[in-house]
Image (tube, rainbow, N blue to C red; front, side, top):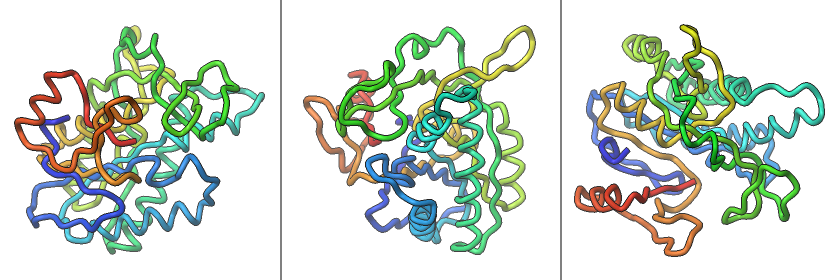
Length: 268
């Protein structure tokens, strides 16, 4: 990801970007839309999206992506003991829900056309992420009540497999939308994870990390600017772990050191 981050901007601070015609990829953190610590209404989430979208007013060309950790976790809970839909289907559902809200906010706040693209992302069935679930989804709990849970900084959360994204299968459609001057909302929730099976594509149960998918989207769109909107003050190294440290600015040497150490600067 370090090759594509030219600047980082946050939900709590104003955004100032040099006006260039190159497309800028803007990534909304799922927690910036819906706080997993609170029971926020749909209206509250829409207001947060509109407030963030308004800060993008000075960017001439944008493509938007978003996380879905709280939302996909809530869908898991809503299924209860009924017939369970697979995670890839739930990711597609969150793309529709959040894509609708974001697209409408772009039209209402920026007076620009936007469209949500249900986006599939290819992953490897042998990715180690399938054997070591690490992606937190849904609300926080005070104690462990499900088998697939892990302790995080804010409490216990359910965790699901999170393979690395390899290729955006629907990138052609995303580019076509952008080339028409329409704002594409794509790769929501990291993209719908699919694998290649017997000459066909098939969904697989996982949630791709939005940060990695956003970096891939920026690369495949030819963008040099990737903006993250989240609900924390800044990026942290070792977030939620011993040695946690804020990162206020990233230069080439720091990027090299982070990459060489195998540590990623990350905000939830």
